Length: 279
Ligand code: SF4
Image 1 (cartoon, rainbow, N blue to C red):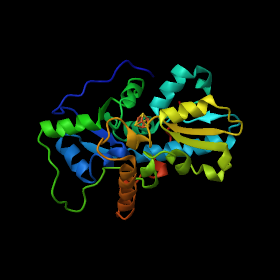
Image 2 (tube, protein in one colour):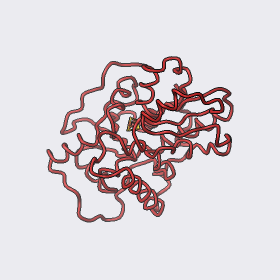
Image 3 (cartoon, rainbow, N blue to C red):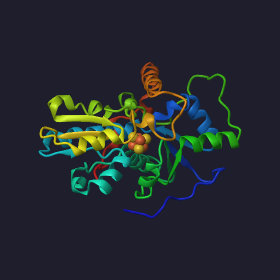
Image 4 (cartoon, helix red, strand yellow):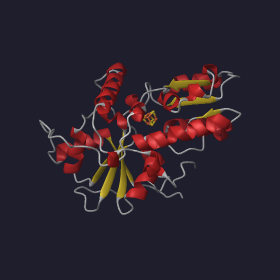
């Protein structure tokens, strides 16, 4: 169902909200401090987007296991918009699979039906995408969140007791999703396609160059608008190089893998039962 525009979000929050945090947040915020500060800001539930990403990767695996012609990833709204506007002849090649934001929005609507759903984003393209789905009520970008923390004087906590965690849906291996090539990796495409049959490209100039050339063998194009992937998003930390941001993602993944997460907070497959992730 399409709708026009996003709902307004006013602080201090008067209703119950769940915020879905893009894993690229580590370029600008620290873990688990981000959870503490978002709760201070009034969010009732704080979840990571990684479970939605996991379900999306599974859908790509299934699709590419049986597809014949070219498929182009539709996880990045910047790429979807570029294809629709500049390469309309390729529009039907875009995978009819939800983006991680929409997939996670569907999961949150199931588990928190009375909450409003907000996405914490590294870019503006997600705001445009959210205008066309009923599964996400609003999008806040990293810079807007920093301003909110400043306005409401929500500072970093100097130390933590054990137990500050995302409310639900932990998933480790899709924490790499903000990196170029992560979709192909987390969808385990090497098990079903020859490495010459898929290509991962980040940075819109590189993607456009690739699209202007002839590639007979390619069955899957895994592409992201920003250089480096979502870690290069326009609202991410401008003072860090892509390489340093990439290291932060890997460090976050490693740290998280050592955590002892209770079963009820894990993004287990049965929690997505009955939800369709195609569009
Ligand atoms: S690659 Fe860039 S435009 Fe695409 S979803 Fe990530 S941050 Fe947004």
